[in-house]
Amino acid sequence: MKNPLPANVSEPDAVGRPGEAELPDLVRRFRAGDEIAFDEIVRSLTPRLHALAVRSLGSAEAAEEVVQDAWVRMYDRIGDVQDPEAFVGWAIRVTLNRIHEEYRARARERNAKEGLAGLRAAAGSRPERMSAAEREDLARVLRGAIASIDEAHREVFVLREIEGLPHAQIARTLGIPEGTVWSRLSYARRMLRDYLSRRRDDVA
Amino acid sequence: MSEERGAVKEHAGPDCCDFARRISDLHDGRWPVESCDCAEVAAHLAECPRCAELRDDYRAISRAAEVIRDTPVAEADCGRISGRVRARLRRRVFVRRLWWTGAGVGFAAAAAAVLFAVILHEGPRHPDGGRVHSVRAESPGDAHTELAAEAPAHDVAKAAPPAPPVPEGATLAERVRRFEQRPGVTLVGEGDMARQATETVRIAPPAPPLLGVLLKDVQSGTGAAWVTVVGVVPASPAETAGLRVDDVIISINGASAHGRGAGGVAELIRRAGPGVQVPISFGRAGEVSTVETVLAGTFRPDTEGPTNDRAPAE
Image: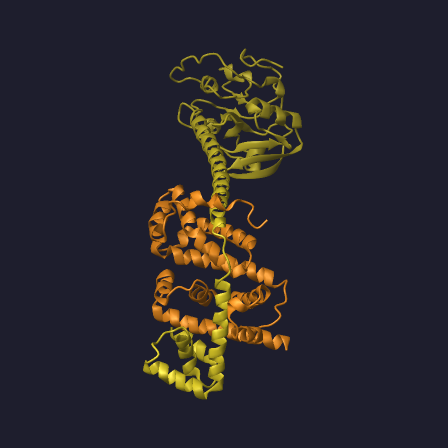
């Protein structure tokens, strides 16, 4: 049920998919009333947002729903984007917000077993040597922590540690100075650690 | 940025606050290993277990992030998702357009109705320039002119024959007749208008039970037929109730006025009978209001009956 369609279904879409460099232009065209431009925007950026959602949620089904919702939201609020050059950062922000709404809603139903202790134990072993269950546990603990921090710090942390972008590119994507990227990362790590240690205390 | 640094301090606790940020930077590979900042942080880490723990926790967090980053993503889903987003947006755009089209048609109809009301309202001007309901004040030489509701037996003059030319100094009766012959006007009047000798004209607005309004059909662009007020008799129940020229009659006594035409609405009022409290809904400037009106019960049927052959007796 994970992927009811054959894998090659996406291929026609991948052909001629516009790159991110074309996005500002497409945004301008869409704002000028060209509806087709939005389709192009969706095709261009969906792989990235989808990957972000799958990684953040750990579920392809939930990710699909979330990405669709995020696009509908972006369609409605594209007027909020002041500068078409900043569209990607904005799109990531909208998607992350939707992801974390979803995550928080689902997290309430679960009981995260361990916080920092689990993370520390896992830090000793290489990810490739962990079992699937261990990896899922570890990922889930951090996802819960990421969902708990505020938007400005979350997006910087996700771009850095989940997407693995260089600092300069994060600064460009979000339209903030590079120094701010560094300081927000520091603060984000700090908050994640505090959140995780509180979790551990709760359990102990 | 300064507020963030302040916040970091707070989180870092009383000691080592200067290092928390630098430990994060070092962890993230900010400095080449030989830089002095790097060396200073490394020295501090060697002697401060709290900061060493912080660094280890940052490493653990990054390790977990790495696990998340390695989550397999099916590229194949992307095409399908794009397609579904397109479909969802198309649906929304369609529904939205439908809504706007509906609203547009509604607005156009309303605008058309207003336009018609204005056109028709402009139509029945007294030749001297006064509006119908001010005939009394302006008709020359009329000792006694009255616009009033009248008995059912003497009303309904529709589809009048072609208007004769109105001579200079025409009597009010002739003027009223001329007015009456304008297309689209349903003037419910009594035959006295032809009796020039008395100079008394009694025009019965649609309702024999004395509401005291002149009504006119209005066709909107979509063919909806409404009735609008083009004249209000002074001191009549209509005036007391606050009805004004240009009001659109929506319902009388709970019965919709839509599509009935001026004659039909007059009939509704007539049916209610005199002395009865009747709710009247009317539209004005986009608002619908309802007034309770006691129809006048004091009308006095004219025993002479109509002398004008255009107004057949009932």
